[in-house]
Length: 259
Length: 286
Image (cartoon, rainbow over all chains, first blue to last red; front, top):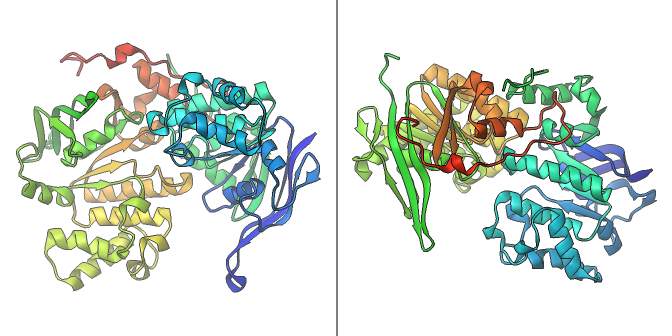
């Protein structure tokens, strides 16, 4: 069953004469409970696709459907109850002057949900922080803890889809591992569907079963994780990304590290 | 190595005093550096950037710093006056920062920023400085350097910005380069190009480099030697191409926690921090 589908998505920016097509004819579908990766260099349009789905960019051509029903460009509140986003930079996406509790409470109040307090506590437990963190401010948290709060804020609404925009690229590798594990656990436990955008092929390959490579606004290749691991790619953009990650230290078919 | 060491550092300590007490950011770091590429890796808060800044004596005013020795060639960096340090910074030791978006002046053209460094240290006329800046932009492989010379930082991309930063740093012909996360703000593919460029320039200009990064993969490929820092101390020193044979549990934990394309795992092992890693190292362990 298809959870989220994007069909013939086109986005252009700029005034009439010098319009730049940032996204052209992008289509993909994500099955319920799957994790789909969108990868590419910066400026390839991957974040624009995510922003359209999140409803942050209303000026687009094509359709976005949730469980088979197309949604209007101006999303209603019910949409955000089902689709939530986690941003790249946990330093920028949390309000510096609000406690963890009131940040997560925000969406509860918007949606007038019953049992809001319990939801906040449950979300904090789910991301491994616990209720002791309720009254802390962002500056009292580490980068990894902040990202957990951002995830908790998205989870508290009990959404169906999480849009993840480079969720670990601002974090250290050791913290990245914790957050990637957390995301994998949550997906399993809560049956969530993920759309993950990243420039890091290794992160995408770790979390996603399927991925699409974007270049200059278009999807140039769609691959399964196994195809990627075996290096079965037909286009240069994917090869470039693979080479870049190998060039930067990942050895092809490495032997088990000596103990 | 017969060549004299460029930089000698012994028992560097940096601490911050605040209302809540004393925080020791760097706790006894020693190393010496020749004309080679030395990497410092560690997580945020491990003290790697503070070490780099201490060498330039560019610590925040709340920090206090001690060291047994801190020498750059003939210059004693501990005893140098602020005036002498101004000669050292930029002229002898240059620093490349992480994000060109924040480290370039947004209201000054690219060309002007490069000529400023050059004229500050070389005392040449405007004309000669301009020609030299364009030459430098060409050296960092910017196409059409004469056009970029007149552009403002917001008009160029991140990768170009970092090239400009490199041009600016190398303009005064320093012999030591401190690169603090020079590619973290860049894309993977651009990152590689910048590293290649940096490498060529290091080779042709015969520079020593202190490469500060949190990215083990990058340091492993790029540097000759690596220091691994944890909680303000160097816990392990190893040749870069033997990083896989690292023995310290912290280094092993970091290496293990990275996702790999060619070795998929269901869960990533999470670093278990041992309080013993924080214990002060004894004199001969250092």
